[in-house]
Every structure is written in structure tokens, then in C-alpha cells.
Image (cartoon, rainbow, N blue to C red; front, side):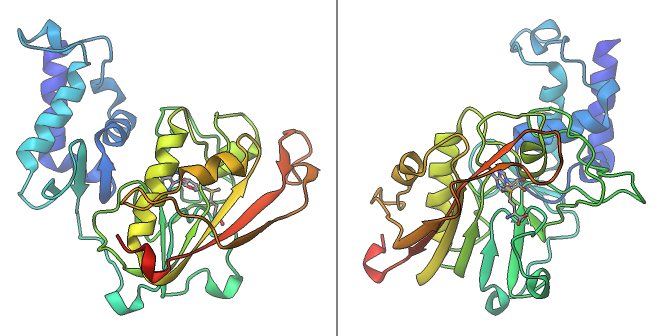
Length: 301
Ligand SMILES: C[S@@+](CC[C@H](N)C(=O)[O-])C[C@H]1O[C@@H](n2cnc3c(N)ncnc32)[C@H](O)[C@@H]1O
């Protein structure tokens, strides 16, 4: 019976299902699993393991094996690609992502969120490429967020009426192979700054770092530094809720391993008390750092 379910899942995905449930972009396989499970929960039984139906099987749920098999069969046939990507990453192309022509790509916002830091006249500036790892579209009326209903760790995201995260492209700032070295004149990077998921407004709206925060932030800086043109600038925004700036700044290195220091920066007020957004979440907002990194010619790898 469970065997049949997993065969059905594979068939659904291969008959066009994969592009209906996974948005276009370059995704880690773990993120693809989440999208698939969200859409076909009845076909994704975590208790039925690969080793129960296959002599050389693993202790991973069989449905994940079926997702990988479907991706492997679809590879190179139009919607699914793997060429040039690291192990465990897949490119879903659907209608081919619309990326502005090279000379329009001046600025990258690598963590666009709701674009709240942008001046109203620049929220849709065609010279800026807004990237984020998630899409959350406004519901009708006061319905709030429609998708994704879960974050990458499978934790449900509460609805956020009137708020949306609608990047130009989906992407992960730790791995952006679709862009050449030295593509952007300026990069804005405002990653989540709390380690653990909480129930308050801050983690709901801005995300959280997770247990591998050091590796993710180090990889993120390295990748964004690669995309920055020589003589370009990167602005990094950091709030010290959980981790002091002094710890974070040591993580930042070029691809060649050279430490990169910001040129100048400043911190907003030390504490403005409880979050202003609502009266009861209790999240504390501490001083936010804005740091400016300049890619001098002698930083070239
Ligand atoms: C602090 S919020 C950014 C807020 C944004 N600057 C604004 O003005 O609304 C952090 C954002 O980073 C995104 N994010 C977290 N990890 C990411 C990753 N690996 N790649 C791309 N975006 C990521 C989250 O989805 C979230 O929208």
C-alpha cells in the first residue's frame, strides 16, 4: 500500500507536478522536500523507510528517494537542471527566470524581505534585483500569507495580514551560481539576526538563523563578495539581539580566505525597548549596526 503511495508521488512529480509545487530557482534538495511535502502530505509518509522496500535502502523516508528519482528522470528535459551546480542543489526553470539585462543589474538586495528598508520610490527600481529565499504573498482581504505555509525547517509560519515577501527571484545567498563574479556595483545584505525561532513578531517577519548560523553567514559573505564588482560597496545590517557584531565580523573572508574588514559603520540607539509593532510579543529591539564594506582593487583573489 505504502509502496503504491510512493509510486504515485513519483508519477505526480514526473507528470508536471514538480514545477507546480516547487517555484523556479536554485534550491537545496531539503527545501524541495518541504515544498513537495506541503503539497502532497498524504503521499509523504516519514515512517516508511527506504530500507523497508529495497535491499540496498537507507534509513531515509522512501518518499524522499522518490523525489530524487523524479528529479533525476526529469533532468535535462526542460524544467529541471543540475549542470554546473554543487551536489544536493537543483535548478527548476519552468518559464525561465526573468533576470534584467546585465547593464540593468546594478544593485542586489540579497535578503529583500518586504523591502521595508527601501525608500518608497525605489521599492520597484528596475536597477535593483530583489532576492530572497522565500515567497509569501498577501492573502485576499485580511487572509494573510498564503504560501509557503511552512518555513524550511517545517515550522508553520503564522499568517501576516497585509505583509508580503515578493522577491524578483528566489535564491539562497550562500550559493548563487547563476551570477558571474563581479556582477553588482552594490549589495545590501540584511540577514536574519536571531538564532532560534521564537513566537514573536521578529522571527515571524524576518526569519531566524538556525544552528549552522556561523557557516551560513561565512558562506553568505564569501558568495556576495564574489558577486561584488571591484570598487563596489556592500552594506551589511546587523542587530545584536543574539550575537555581537565582534563575533560576526570575524566570519567575513574573501574566496581566497583573506579577512575582510568594514571601512566604517555605526550603531543605532542601544535599545529602544520592546518591539513597537505590537503590544504583547515582548521582542526586544537592540541597536542595529550598518557596516560599509568597500571592495578595493587589492582585495582581488
Ligand atoms: C531581516 S529580513 C530582511 C528584511 C528586509 N531588508 C526588509 O527591508 O524588509 C531577512 C530576510 O532574509 C531572508 N533569508 C534568510 N536566509 C536567506 C538565505 N539563505 N538566502 C536568501 N534570503 C534569506 C529571509 O527570508 C528574510 O526575508
